[in-house]
Image (tube, rainbow, N blue to C red):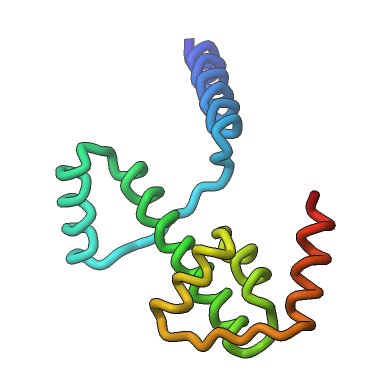
Length: 126
């Protein structure tokens, strides 16, 4: 009986792993959070009518997207990448990156060399 139960559980776990991989979810991330943050998560779960994992995935995705924009703009401000490349790194369009940079008061600097690099990269992608 015990052996049969183990087989059933293993089959079930294997099916779940296949489904999660199909959805692009292959890694488990675990962390401890302060009580006040856990309370906030519970409130969000109630408002969004979603389970903890869904809420955490959604918030984490939004946070990572924001970090990518911040990092890309930092590189752009330092002159290490063009604005077009910063947009690609952040996963947004050039127009969106221009708007974000303007909202954050980042000086727009675009040289002829930048234009050449961006055109070459854009043509390469087609």
